[in-house]
Image (cartoon, rainbow, N blue to C red; front, side, top):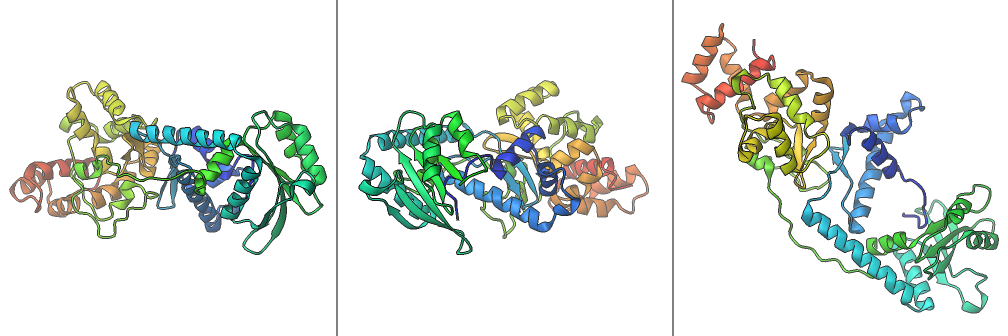
Length: 420
């Protein structure tokens, strides 16, 4: 049940603030809980608390989508959270259009008949889930325009009295005080306006020594109407973007793959295997150092074109943009980064690797994600020298790999300490 008039910083707002302080994430859910409540006992980081946090963020995403806004969080398997990158130009244009429509809606509400406006607010309350909603008689309303009951799944019932103000000017402190003065001891109050609230009104509404009064300004009113399908219509169109995972070589899709937008593309790949591209610097490169440099370029979630420009600046020997794009996909192959809305973003594994620079963080990912990794490891396990390993790979590469690809996999296995 959604409570109309809930004001102040939400849990999702606090999570966004933490992630902005922590380089946009990703952070594990347990880390987020500790950041949000640093003074709490460690026992507060429980499965229940983690589940509640993830649920709150998923509800925030659903709410933002219904209001015509892009979700702000990327949640992977309910275990880590990051801020999503800005939308690509098409997404940004859609969001800008939606905001224009909501502004037009608000302008029309300011022009409509006052009684019509009261009934629109009453219908909105019913859509949100309020019960026993009734518009008061004009001759005997005592300043109250709508009465309703907020029912929290039948556990609690909170009588609510609303004033609606079809205004252009700011609503001030006197209006908040008059509403509070007209409330019964068990009631909460809500003021809904098509304009905005002055600072003193906001301060007075936040007082803890009287009946609670919640404030709905014009912007929030338009958001709530859009969320519940009042005054706006929704159209849908297919929206295409390149599947970078497929272009990385992930050709063996898992039958259990899901289209759930809450789960990251990398997490959806399940049983996919990826082919490796050569790193900048070729065979002589320090793979871990090069990977860390490549991952660091994604910390600020740059657009893909911007990332490629940074990549070429960092590795000037890569003169062609298409070659830079092919080589940067090593990050996708290893699950260190994703491409979302044409922006390159770190995954939780990528963040951990960048912070710790620990090759052990890559070992399991390499064996589980890279085509031929396990087969090459097993093939050379009995070889006593490096030349013997190279000969085995050259003469009898695993099925599905060329000898060149198998040799690249072997070099990675060696640098990651997965073969001795």
